[in-house]
Image (cartoon, rainbow, N blue to C red; front, top):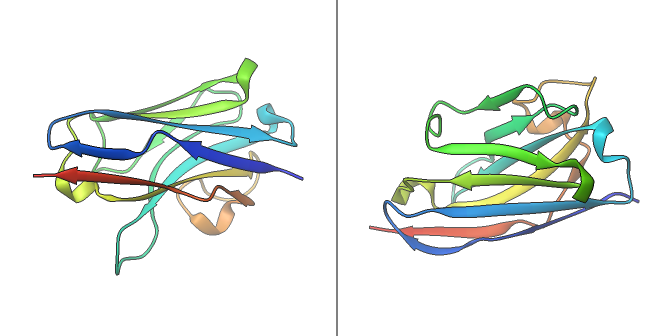
Length: 125
């Protein structure tokens, strides 16, 4: 059974930084494309960033390009999201997700097979 557990959320002032982490257990980490999504109150879950199973190709939402960086540590079965220059509009619950690398679009939550429980990120102005 594949499980994803996020950590690293919290409260930060605008302009600050946070690093989210997600550990994957119960599966073969290199087989998965990994994604980060977020959901703000009253809004739909939206794509933030993703990385291919080989740790090669990366993908970003326009709203976070140049501010967020996704990367993996394959030895530890972990994926990270480094978030810099945070804005109040980045406030949301952030979810880590895994999908079989060959299947579906990285940008669509429907393509992902496994999800974490989420971690709250709050950016104050």
